[in-house]
Amino acid sequence: MPRSKPNTKKSSPAKPGAPSEAAKAFALVEPELDDVREVVPINVDVPRAVSVAIGAVPHLEALRPRFVEELPKHPLSQLDKLQTYALAAWYAHLLALPASGGQDALKGLLVEAAPLREDLLVAAEALAHKGIVDAQRVAEIRRGQGHLDTANDLVALAALFGEAWDAVKNRTTVEWEDVERASRLGPELLVALGARQQPGVPAPKAGDAAERRARAFTLLVNAYDACRRAASYLRWNEGDADAIAPSLFARGGGRKPGAGKNNAGGSGEGEGKGEGASAAPGATGGEPLLEPTVA
Image (cartoon, rainbow, N blue to C red; front, side, top):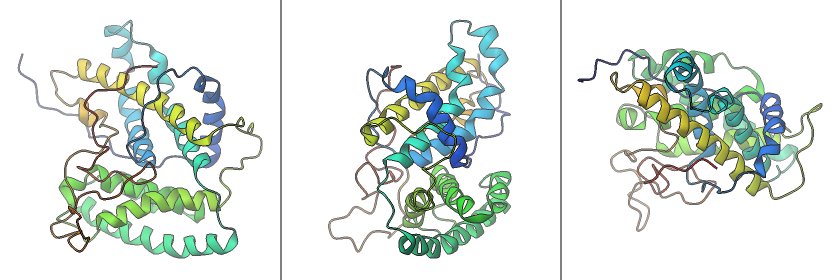
């Protein structure tokens, strides 16, 4: 049967959520971490992946009646807990970051964060005016106030540009380095603001923070991939499953023409390496050849 024309509004990355919400989500999920049998390697920018997943949640939840009717064996907990898994992975990422350098470091981060947020916002608003990125998401980011919002806004903006980089890289003054820095700076600022200490929320268990992050990220990836597969089946004729739930992993693209040419031996595409570096589109750490299996 030929596919009908997609009529679903494309999912767009969303703010990762307040640290207090993320801490509560992690507390709910933490008992499940020890049950993860096979950990998914973190070869993608965690803040961006979380933003993409949270942006997709409403679109997937809209399909819930069809999940129930047409996929009776699909574990609904993977859909119903998807937001919680995303927030838990976000908080686990914050827990795994190095401690801040005190008030002096915080001041430096704030000095850098405000203009970077404004630069990215202005560029995003211009792209939204042309219909290239989601205008509603950009407006939500613009409404943010205060230091905590600034940090989350940077993460959301980095995810927004990262998701649309193929379409915007030659139509904006933003450089890929700005996107990468925003994705790192947002979490760093949250740590410096003391976002890891949330009163009234049980303290995380002692243990390897990097291991907890990997296990929390695995729960998110497995649940999200299961929901994507289900959406692909349910929306096969429309062909818009990727619009409903985009991949958490960066796809094709690269830097702007000429970017990175001054780096000796650099290819100009995604030189950043390591777990903490954001995976530039087209770089190692993009779409895996095989989808992770459910732990």
